Length: 193
Image 1 (tube, rainbow, N blue to C red):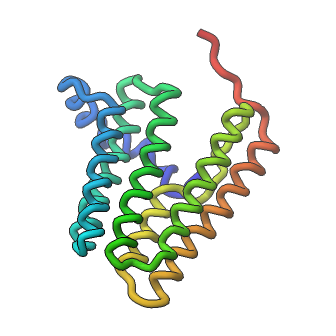
Image 2 (image 1 turned 30 degrees about the vertical axis):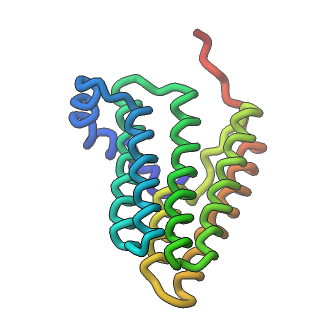
């Protein structure tokens, strides 16, 4: 499992009051996920128009919403299979929209290595899930990937490319870890309803 995902229980506890306030206002986890995607699309437009720092700022806000949607779902008992997939797909679309905008605005094309690695990791998790296998062993998750992406965007020259390639490579390693852990661990048992 991602190193930072180990802190999810503490994050959920900190966001519990906020999550309940959102729920009482009629905001669902999927609405928060969609809002994060929309903000990331806007961030990509800012980056494409040459306002990379404003784009990064908006993208970070969108990523923070990604931290809220899961906490809202877990703390309010609103987790669902659809929500899990919707969140994962929106995460990847958010990254794709923002990175595409950044590349259009002048960031090196190697930033797409982050997307390639991200998509590979998603595919390995979906493969495991469809087979009823666990895939929690991946050590490199979205928080670490986004940190390396932002470091790459803020760096110049060969350093930016190195950060992008490192993120893509660590996603590849995590994909292999996820697939290997799914093979070693017993199948997930779906609860009966």
